[in-house]
Length: 105
Picture 1: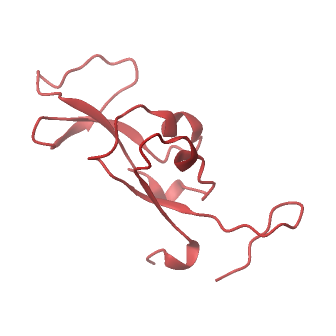
Picture 2: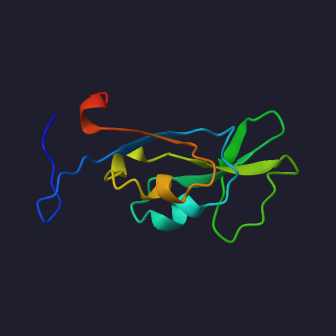
């Protein structure tokens, strides 16, 4: 694995977001608010757990009455820089992160 350091030379290993557990996610969007990389977005889910679609900001769409809850989905995980801020603010610990040497090519 490559050696990474911070600006002051301290060792650091980025941890990249690879998935979010939709069963554990409560859709609070704390992770979304701390991420400026457009890595994840809120999606609507029906009672069976099927994803209905992306929730548009300021949209009160209930997906034709099918909306049961909202969850965060890592739909652009390739944009993640490995800062791990999302994991630090998540009250449910539902993100999975991996070190660079564990990423699939």
